[in-house]
Length: 156
Image 1 (cartoon, one colour):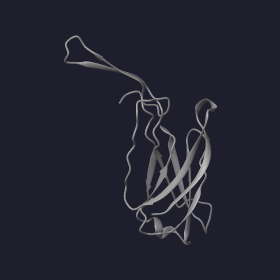
Image 2 (cartoon, rainbow, N blue to C red):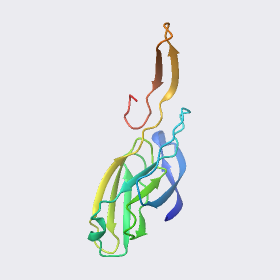
Image 3 (spheres, rainbow, N blue to C red):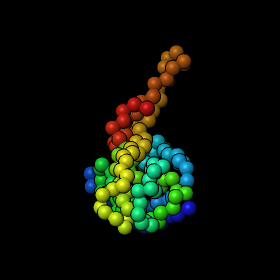
Image 4 (cartoon, rainbow, N blue to C red):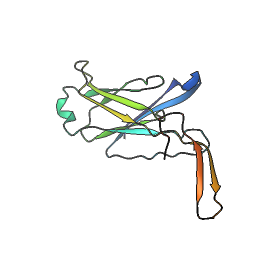
């Protein structure tokens, strides 16, 4: 599989900076899982974009440029990759939790008009301040938590 890494500085909410790494990996099938913890520190996440079956027919060159950006935070840099019809998607590592990403794919040798565009939302952050209260009947429990800061989710 194809992989490239480079470091990029992103800015989180309230202007707090953190260093993250961009990793792009070609994939031949949808894969991946998100691991989370209740520590309040988001686990690294990834998104896999699946290319449509007719995608390669629209290309005239040997490279494509993939631009992507979240709806919050700093946009990520784009990357250029070689065309390989065996590749059905690309896995983008270290995405921001709870953000909607817009992906645009361009024929690198042609115009600035994208040949394909898609949006996908990353998993939300984990809930904070998780606690469990047992009821008097011992047959029920109440789970209390504060919703994650990103993603707009209040129930799980």
